[in-house]
Every structure is written in C-alpha cells, then in structure tokens.
Amino acid sequence: GENVEQHPSTLSVQEGDSAVIKCTYSDSASNYFPWYKQELGKGPQLIIDIRSNVGEKKDQRIAVTLNKTAKHFSLHITETQPEDSAVYFCAASSSGYSTLTFGKGTMLLVSP
Amino acid sequence: GAVVSQHPSRVICKSGTSVKIECRSLDFQATTMFWYRQFPKQSLMLMATSNEGSKATYEQGVEKDKFLINHASLTLSTLTVTSAHPEDSSFYICSARKGPNEQYFGPGTRLTVT
Image 1 (cartoon, each protein chain N blue to C red):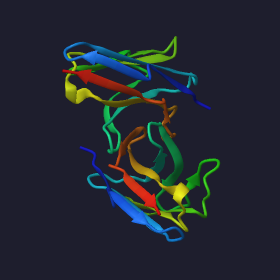
Image 2 (image 1 turned 180 degrees about the horizontal axis):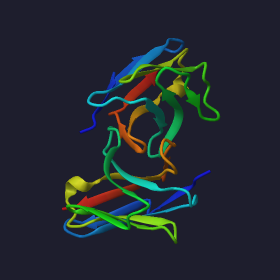
Image 3 (image 1 turned 180 degrees about the vertical axis):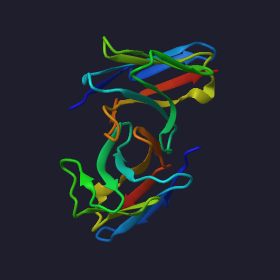
Image 4 (image 1 turned 90 degrees about the vertical axis):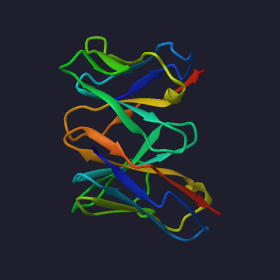
C-alpha cells in the first residue's frame, strides 16, 4: 500500500519568514495530493491540493509543488503569520474514490 | 464551500454505555464518508469507510461490532461506540468525500469514557 513520509516533524520560524514542509510517497499510481491544516482541538481543514498533471499550484501565500519523478511534494508558506501556527498534514491517494494516506504531520510554530 | 458538521463536539460517558456521534455534510451530498480516530500528537487513523446504503468497510484491527457505522442518507453518517471503555477515549473525526478525491473534515468529537 501507499506510504507517505513527512518532514520535518516540527518547524519553528519567525513571523515573515517562509516555511517549507516536504512529503514523499511510495505508490507511483498516486495522483492526488492534498494538504490539511489542523488547529488544536479542531478537525483538519483542506488548504490546498494538487493533482499529478500539474507541477505547481498557488493560492495567495501558500503553494504546493509536485515532482512525480522523485515522488515528492512540498508545501510552501510565504510571509508566515502567527495564525499559521498549526499542525499540517500531507496526504496522497491513487485513482479516484480511493482512501487518503496521511503523513505524520508537521507542527509549525510562527513566533511574532 | 464544503461544510461538514459533527455532533456532539464533546461527550463524557460511563464505562459500559454506548454513545452515538453524527456526521453531516451540510452543503453537498456525500455517498462516501470516513471515520478517523486521532490520538494526541499523532496522525489520523482511518477506522472505516461508510458508503450510503451499504455496509461500512472497516480497516484491519477495527472491531466492527464495537464501532457501528450507519450511512442512511447522502448527508448523514453515524458512528456508535458500543460498550465503551476508557481505552476508547479519543478524538473521533469524520470526513465526507466531495467528487472523486476531495475530503472535507468535520470539527471532531472528543469522547471521554469514565
């Protein structure tokens, strides 16, 4: 089955800096890669996703890049703000209607 | 948008009793919903896949007789924890699938069994 590795497990940055979280996946059939943000005591919130026919996707301060050959994808957050502090999870799934496999999560702390 | 609600948000029950958690997709229909369990500082663990009008598919190691899932409509799935014990205390989160891939999560239910 699919295996998703996520690094780093914790990431501390200063407000205004950029943050990058990386994930690798094992199943070359995977073609959908979402990122979720989870605040303490809440459910995960889908913040951005990318499909295998696209190499990069941006939404304001967040972007995701995908390298299918290397089987890795990354989340980039620019101009970080304290409210970006949360746990971020990457995930992967293969063909439509299959389940998501999650990474172990990255705790991002943005200090003012 | 894609909004998923869960009720209750918190529940405390005595050991040996049962508790039901509801998951609703508020602005879309979901033929498939998922139930996850999350321990502190850990990732999401898929418990089961709930399909409208059919039996749920449970992940390996999840007791189907203990965690009863019903998906009676395109907007509602329920998880019933039967004969709850303290080790069942956890954060339970549902998600609903919109389209072939996107999953939208509920806010979670904190279950404490005393």
